[in-house]
Each structure stands twice: as structure tokens, then as C-alpha cells.
Amino acid sequence: MKKRFLLFLIFLIFIICTTTFVVILNYLDPFEYTKLALGSLVFSYLFWLSSLLCLILYIIKKIYFRWNITIYHVLVSFRQSFFISVFFLILIFFNYYWASIIFTAFLSFIVLFFLELFIKNWE
Image 1 (tube, one colour):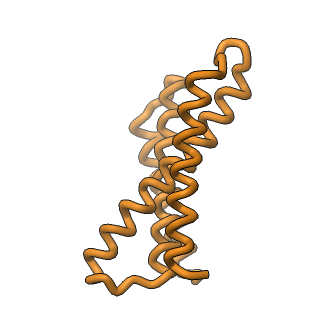
Image 2: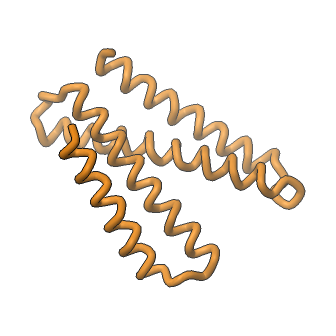
């Protein structure tokens, strides 16, 4: 798979999730279909934020590595942005249930950080 094609797919995911997010917010009643609305919002938010952060991380890495980027950098950017998105969703989830946000943020960051290190060393 080529790097441009993968970036095009990530951009396409961003556009689709943006339109899905807007359509869900405008046309789905969260009081009538609570589980459907919440599940689809979380799913679209997760992939919207992941693709947006992946494109931002890709641009930052492109500047940092002086335009010498491989497909490996794009995949790493997507994985890291997915973990950051999961971290934000965990924070939103625990904030919704009035849990201690500082303690859960620290624990979820540690778990996701060690998961990232494990995957990085496994490659």
C-alpha cells in the first residue's frame, strides 16, 4: 500500500466521520434512542479524532524528519492518535459518571503508555 493512498483513506475517514457526527447530532433524538445515539456518537467521535490527530501528527513528523517519511511513520501516527482518542474518551466517560478524573486520567495514561511501549518493542 502506498503512503498517498493510506493518507487519502485517513482523510476520507475524517470526512465521513465529520458528516456522520453532524448528521447524528441533527437528526437522531438522543432521548428516544439513547443507546443508538450514544454508541454512534462515540464511534464517530473516536474515528474523527483519530484521523484528525493522525493527519496533524503526520505533518509534524514530516517537518521533523525533513520530508523523509515512510509508510511506517503514517501507521505509527495513526496508532498514537488512536490511543490519544481512546484516552480522551476514557476521560469523558469517567467525567460523565463523576469519578475522580485526576486518578483515572493518570491510570489510563499509564496503561495506554505501556501498551504503546509494548507494541513499539514488539515491532
